[in-house]
Length: 214
Image 1 (cartoon, rainbow, N blue to C red):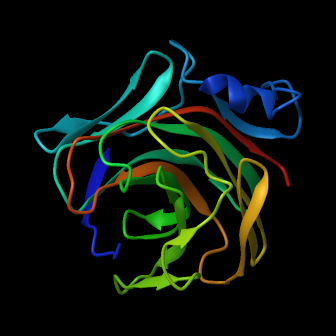
Image 2 (cartoon, one colour):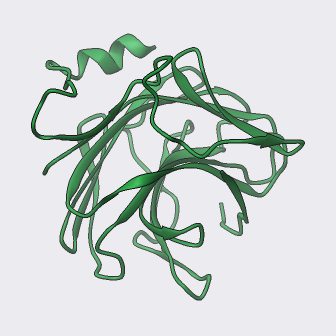
């Protein structure tokens, strides 16, 4: 399933592999979920496409394309439910304006309630919560610059979220960029997302998603 929300917000792969000295496998007892988007072993991601954009699993990657401005699109994994976990995923922007964003939604209650950790290929990140009343609560003052992000089209960034109880830590390429304490959502599903501001033609690829016990 693909959901669209008005994005009312102000605004290779070898490097990522080198950052992981040991690659988790499904046999690891600490692994709660693993997806490298290989044919025949991909998780039950809710994906679809229309004139505004497409979300699909292609070439062993999850691809999100957006052809309309001011749009947030995501692919949700409807199960399992995660509470305390560490999630890592490799992400790269393939096409479009580098001001477009991409990242992780987690502890999702539904398509309108979740936490969000996104970066841009221009070197910015944001951490925020979408609440039941439709409002956004940012845990940083605005989109914040960090040198931890590998910038430009095609550059791979490993995103990591560590969530234990009310404590949440956010990393880019093993660098801690933000830590937050919040008790609005304590468990939920996960999703991979991308978003546009005024631009169109955004294309993002995700790979090597792992959810482990903290």
